[in-house]
Length: 496
Image (cartoon, rainbow, N blue to C red):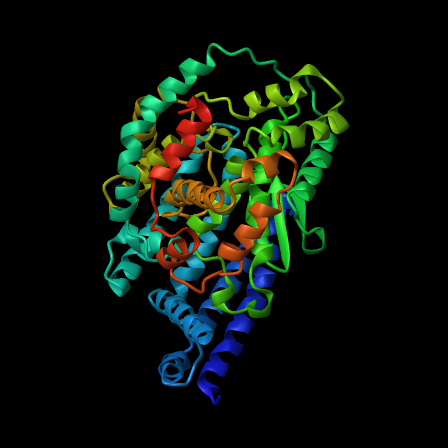
């Protein structure tokens, strides 16, 4: 078929993908390897790259090519790809290059300073940098909202969860706000009567890393197309052809690193499972951050905290740390499913975790809409943490509003994706069990292909072919249904 305009657009997308590849590796290196004194030069280089990518994405010729391609005889795959190209083009054209470069520079400087300011509990030093990041984020939100006809916060949310609106998030979260506090009380009361043997450390970092690598192998990660490193905040970056995962270690407790690594492996396998024949085109990208989090939480929570999965992990713990009573599978499962309100989101259990997201969603929406300022964050944080989890965070900035990398890095609108991802993951596993009645028995035998093959077929290979609601409907037979998440938590933790 004669599709010259579409072919021109596809070639331009390949160029953006390849330059983005270099940018992603530079960002990974900045977080995992770069010496501290290299940050200013690296930040300037990344801002330069952001400017170049923005120039390419806003080339005036694209408007005519998009219209011409829409009139060409495209097949369904090409038409879906054209939809995604147009989406990115609209967002890019809403922002001037100077703002794109200023955002990159401010975010990199704030995030780099945060790495040392957080351990020092230095909110007074952190706040001025965050004010600059927020100022630029508000400017970005205003321009995107004018372009897309959305509220300012929705315009940012749309960058991470295309098509999702905060009103829809609220509808999904409203039942959660109602039943979550009672569930936390019921589960902690039930678990208070149980005897749990605590592991005896220390757990050397080298042994923890070897354990994490074995867990990644168990979960099917392809080490020919990725690797594991260490950073201040765990993440999965790089590109589908070269996935870069990181974790962090504490020698007094191996569980945060192990489960963090399993979590990031879910992200990594999603990237590695995207349709290789379409890589470089927007249609081959992950659908959204909520869908991405559904993969990491499918690995970490649905599978990694499955009662039978402890039997697969226990031999690995004995291999790397030596035998001890705490590693008996039944006890290990108790350790993996302890529910206790805590300060740190990334270390939270799956029952209390949504409370952390409700807190951040409420605060960041107020920040972007202009209903709160940076100086208001500590008081808002303290009040919401006391209300949702009964914890006192007054004066504890490092374990409070400074704990996450997202706001220093300018990622406003991202946080709802975590709990949306938990809801999607519960829905995926409810569907798997309906289609594979012996799924739990197969997991107990270490036969994980039923999980991975389903995700590969229904999520990974589909990439961005469908808008999120259609992807969810096709995969599970229904729209997003938060009731699956509640049912999952009640079944696992209360036997209800």
